[in-house]
Length: 149
Image 1 (cartoon, rainbow, N blue to C red):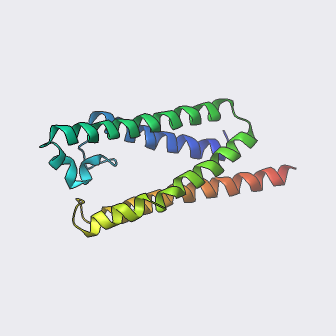
Image 2: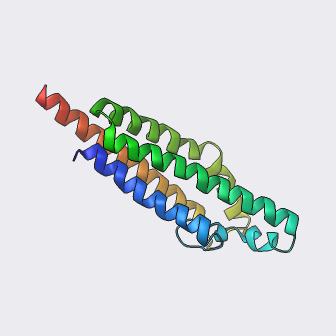
Image 3: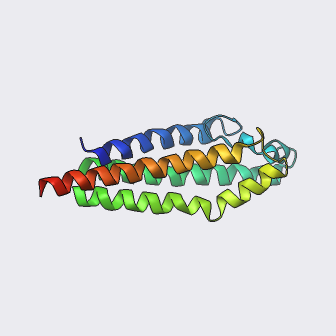
């Protein structure tokens, strides 16, 4: 099994746990459950708003499932070039978090709308960790490939 396959599989496992959390325990504050947002509990007092929030949670979980399924196909059937390009795509797509989502959650955290306080920093470090793991796996893979050729 290649370094890239291992990195992708680790990501698949973490994302699968997140999908399970979103589908079956969305209000949890563990595993990136939506319960870290204080507004989630508040949304329950308004059925229309809570229906929208629940829909969006399931939409995110469903989208994550699509990526998980595609990554499984890439690990099982993809060539080394496909895995390299998939990891580059993962790094770039994960980095998009810092464009819109991180500024938003940081602002909510600073306003006291997130529990526990400081969660935005933890999430930012966790996402950066995934990017570093993918980048390291990519570099190791390219070095190994260059050494063979």
